[in-house]
Length: 189
Image 1: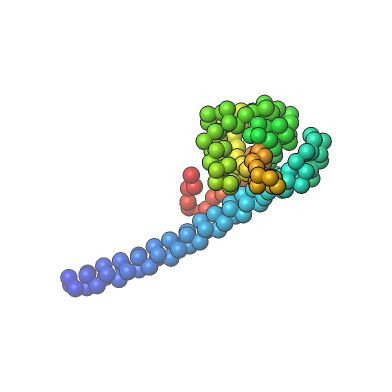
Image 2: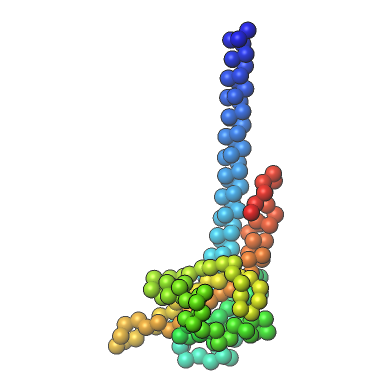
């Protein structure tokens, strides 16, 4: 009798572990799919800063009208973009969605103790710095991605020009990636 109980326990335990392993693998696949969608959505929007940087490098003496025309064409109805910005010498001087972002105009990133460390890191490492979601000066929250822009100077090599920046609405980003829908039987945080 004890042998039968032990055998029954071993079989039940083995079956439980097999079902748990299958459930874990299925969950891992679903989470990987969500992560992939989030990464794809974020990367798509981050490419807009590359477009802004190319715009600056093609003509660093542009004016506000040139910026507005280019930025409007670049965004062209994409959802979840709170603002595109250019910050020559790390001071925000060009923005989209002016009505909602006017308080950001003139914001000196070097003078802002909350932003300065990431700004300096981006310049030093010559790569994107992504932060957030953070509280914005103009109100609301966003994921902020800043790409330092360097111009080629014949006499001195590359020189820091400023930043190309995108502010992404995290709620829209999460919705587009399908994260807001969640996974059956799983609570996402």
